[in-house]
Amino acid sequence: MAPGLTVFLSNRECPWRCVMCDLWRHAMPGRVEEGDILAQLDEALASRGSRRMDWLKLYNAGSFFDHGAIPPSAYEGIAVRCSGVGQLVVESHPALVGPRIVGFRQRLPTGVRLEVAMGLETVHPEAHALLNKRTSPGDFERAAAWLRDAGMDVRLFLLTRPPFLGATAAREWLFRSVDMALDMGGDPVVVIPTRGGNGAMERLQAAGQWEEAPLEWLEDAVLHGRSRGLGRVLADTWGLSERFAGQPGAVALIERLEKLNRGE
Image (cartoon, rainbow, N blue to C red; front, side, top):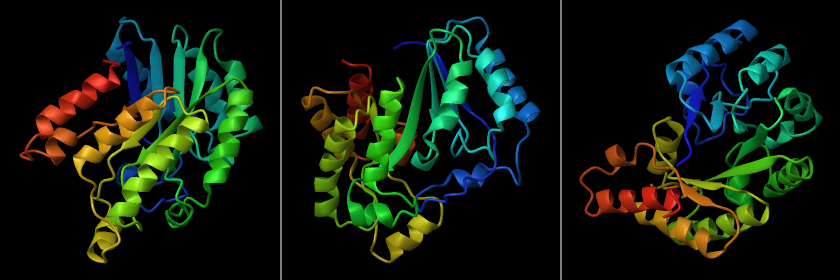
C-alpha cells in the first residue's frame, strides 16, 4: 500500500450531531484557532520524519470546510504543508460542498489532488432522514457530481447497518447503498461497521431499533461492490479485532478484509 499519514485534528464539536456519531466525545469545548490547527499538523508531520508520504488525510471530527472548525486563514498554511503529497483527503458535509472548496483547492501545490469524503451512510430515504444529517441521498448525489465536475475525487462512507432498519431490510439496503455510492462516483466507497458507544445507539438498541450487523456483512458488501467493476470498495477495519475478539472465524475474516483493502 502507498505510504501516507492520517491526522486527527482536535476541533470543536460538529454542529450536525448525527445520531450514530461518537466523535463529539473527543471534541474541544470551543473554536480552535488557526495557530492551534497548524501546530497540531506540524506535530503530526514531524512524527513522520523524512519518510515518503503519498497521501495525507486531515480529519477534524466534522467538516473541514466548516469555517467554525477550520478557519479559512489556516488554508494557506495547511496547503504549504502539503508540498510533496500526491493526495489530500478531507471530510465535508454535502451542504458545504461548493465554491468555498475551490478557494482552498487553488492554494494546494501543483500535483496535489484533493479528495473530499462524505458520510452518505445509507440511501434508504427514511432511515437516512432519521440520522439527523439534515440531508437526503439526492443531496449527496448532487454534491458528488459537483466535486467530480470540479476535478476533485469523491470518497463516500456507508454504514453496514444503520439504525431504524430491520435485519432483512438493512442487508438489502446495504447492497443498494454500495451500488448507488459507486454510481455517484465514489472511489473509494468505504463501508464502516456501525458501532455503539455514544449513548444514543444504546438507547436505540434497547428500543429494538438497532442491532450490530454480523461481521460477515462487511465482507459481503465489499465483495458485492468489487463485482461491479467500478470504483474501489474498502472495509473500515479499525478496532474490529477488539470488537469481535473471540468470535469464531473473526480473525480469518479480518485478514481477508485487509487483503481486499490491499487489492489482493
